[in-house]
Image (cartoon, rainbow, N blue to C red; front, side, top):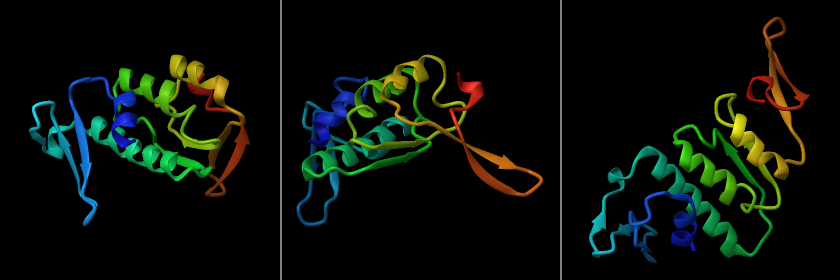
Length: 145
């Protein structure tokens, strides 16, 4: 399931052909179509982030249980195409409840528009400099709209 999920998220179709997980130590090995091992450092930071998301998505899907998903800074290392794939493929299908803790520069414009139909509630964490505290306000980041 992890490979299937990773295939949905990555843009380089021939990057990884097979993923094996050792039953003894749970280490993961990635392979090309020519059965060559792919070192993890060959993946970009964004591809490693997508692989981590694919692992969590595959495990959650395999469990058969309704598990909430919470993601902090979900698109910080991703390029435009990977952001679009994450918004279109993962966020709407990850779980029945997905909480995204994003910055104002991650989910904006077209990304926000694509995600909006799947949003039940939006909150903004506002920092009060005078009181040195944070509080929640309804709505999304004004600068992102």
